[in-house]
Length: 261
Ligand SMILES: Cc1cc2nc3c(=O)[nH]c(=O)nc-3n(C[C@H](O)[C@H](O)[C@H](O)COP(=O)(O)OP(=O)(O)OC[C@H]3O[C@@H](n4cnc5c(N)ncnc54)[C@H](O)[C@@H]3O)c2cc1C
Image 1 (spheres, protein in one colour):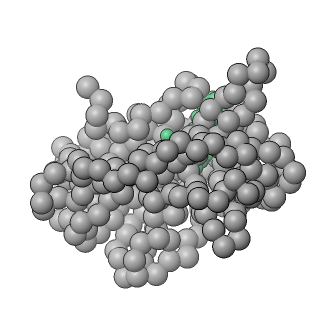
Image 2 (spheres, helix red, strand yellow):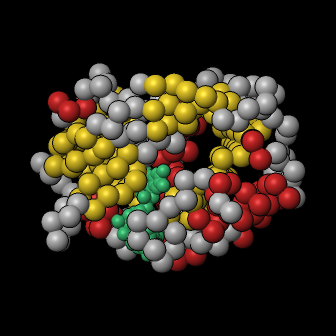
Image 3 (cartoon, helix red, strand yellow):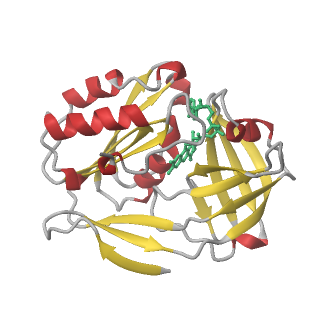
């Protein structure tokens, strides 16, 4: 594992340290599949290849490789929701949307199936004096948001604002942090609309030294980031916003919408 340069520079700002690891591919076995909520499928993986698996940041991603019809593997990004080195298990949560091969793979998955994964290769570990966390997203970001809420130190103040289709898609996170959850309900077909998330954000206090993390459909991530910059005057160094997928495009994401020109 290599540690290098914090790229959010000023001493008063949060530091985001990039951690790079050699790309390791692992062939794993599916040992359990369950429907966590109506639109989320939880897959548990195990296997000797998991030895050495390391995911330093809650918003890490791995690649999953699914056999394509033409023999060329299809690659998609997923969050290591939970890795338990004691039990040798890795949990991935798949949004059940009716579009692509990764979601279809998860719908059909059963114990005994195999899944090849690669990574995580690059992590961004946020540190520094952060008084409050604001985590914003849609169902694809729930694994990263859930992991962050669960892994924050006791008493850390964290607010989540997450859009999901309905009450039954809400998730409970077990944490020692002081967590306040806001849920927005909208059909999945409207996952590229930011209005519901913005309506909640407009009512929220965003204290100084709040680190805002956003993971959502790319248009939503852009609109939310711009709102935070323009209307709430959150400094750019205190926001990390990613487009986790793009409506109408397969295998599309924007890892940092702040880097777009
Ligand atoms: C860093 C990172 C971490 C991620 N972690 C997770 C995770 O843990 N769990 C998870 O479920 N997703 C996660 N995603 C999002 C996931 O990679 C995408 O949703 C991916 O496109 C799904 O692949 P697919 O083969 O199912 O659909 P694709 O073949 O990529 O897309 C087919 C069609 O489905 C649409 N589509 C894709 N995703 C969705 C969606 N969520 N809802 C509605 N329509 C959609 C596309 O716009 C396209 O029209 C993550 C993305 C990133 C960048």
